[in-house]
Amino acid sequence: MKLTSEIINKLPKAELHCHLDGSLRIKTIIELAEIQGVELPSKNEDDLLKILSIGPSEKSLEDYIKKFDITLSVLQTPKSLERAAFELAMDCHDDGVRYLEVRYSPILHTKKGMQLSETVDSVKKGLAQAFNECGILTGIIICGIRHISPAHSLELANLSVEYKNKGVIGFDLAGAEENFPAKKHKEAFYLILNNNINTTLHAGEVYGPKSIHQAIHVCGAHRIGHGTRAIEDIDLLNYINDHRIPLEICLTSNINTRSVSSISTHPFKHYINEKIRVTLNTDNRLISNTNLSNEYKIAINNFNLNESEIRTIIINGFKSTFQSHNERRKLIREIVNELEDEFNFSQHLII
Image (tube, rainbow, N blue to C red; front, side, top):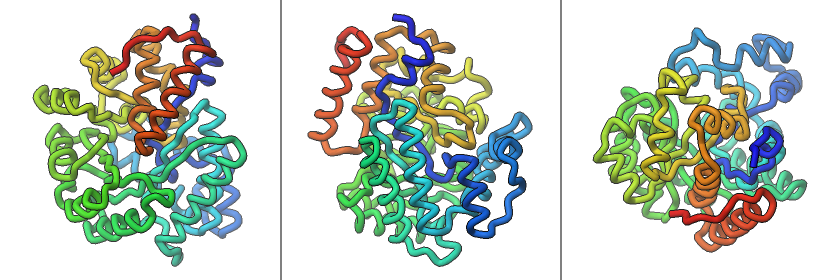
């Protein structure tokens, strides 16, 4: 079967690593700024897209993160968060995404007095509206921030406990890795793990395997965000593989942040060959100017993926969700049947 762009778009997909504040529509940013009286560097859609998308002169994770100052400036009200969540879920649905985990840090949305709980309620409303319109399944991952006080991470961990089984399905640690080790936030993760909440940490994106080691062995990560540097420690990589710890790979973003020097040097294919549980994700649809179908196209074209490998990556996404086990099993069976019946993907053993 020839995988055209149209077919790739229609393939059922799971999006596990997607930041709300990095995935807004350009038009929405301009409209929200007008409503809220926020000054933008440009009100022209094309110009603002160029400003917010990563350019060739920007060469670090810090450059990447700096873009969020603009998007966060219009996400300081309940209505703006609700709209952003709704539109993101609808955009994902149009991209073939059946299951979406939206992550964001409530602490970054309190500059105008919004309460932490208000941010969660607003995101929940937007996602619920999208479900009612198109049926997309969603969950919320709350992020602590490495370069913000660990006390705030603990506060956000308590918020996650409050909203457990009420929309929040996981806890994350995002932000700049270098000089901001995950172990400083271990009190938050102790609380999270002792309340039986799933965890994923940004690790091994631009900092070495030690960052991944801390994420797993100090903070108890059930998934790893990015993990491109895991290949530098084969013993650690074997542990990740043996324990089926999924890696949330974001190809375009990894190039944007110089996590890898080029797509040809990305360890993605090596991970596939070693049967690591890799998943494909966008990270930030706006900042990286991508969508999940595009990430699949990049992987297929650059790593010469065969039908079996594509199918495995798709199923890996659904196997790695933070749903309950029985919900996950039900969804996987539906996706497997669809891949066989609608797309003629032949059945094979998936581990």
